Image (tube, rainbow, N blue to C red; front, side, top):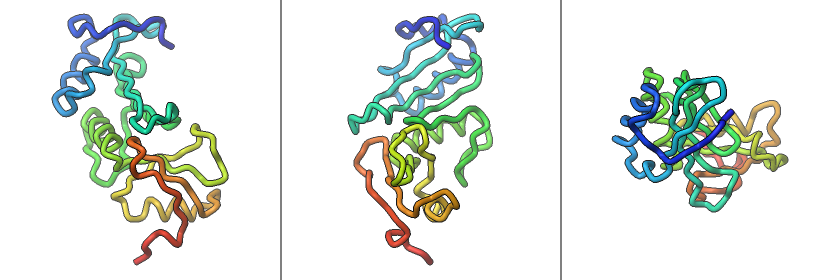
Length: 171
């Protein structure tokens, strides 16, 4: 839980936050304008917090990057989030921070998207899928819980669309 949030002051960031911030800004320098720092209840020091609203205008589709427990990179996209150890993509790097950078870049490029069942409008229940994984969409649309119809929500909003199995090219 955040006690307080302030403008970014890199020299006072925790070592883990500072290290990840350097890597993040090396790959995605535009995120500097969204970077802040926060104090986390029960954890000493200042920690990285990046909040980037979606250009789609959908307030439920923002990108958030924070340091879970002060030292593990976590990423949120809309109502979905993950922590260090994420390896949901076939080509995700093995290193935790590199995997998080890969994920962040993919979200911003509309590669990793939210998939929401057509029967459910709750943004907290969307799944993240990799559009470059040829089986990801089919797996979600044919899952036991699926209605067979879903809405793809991209970070930019440009690739938003409704899909069903007839829209998926089966080889």
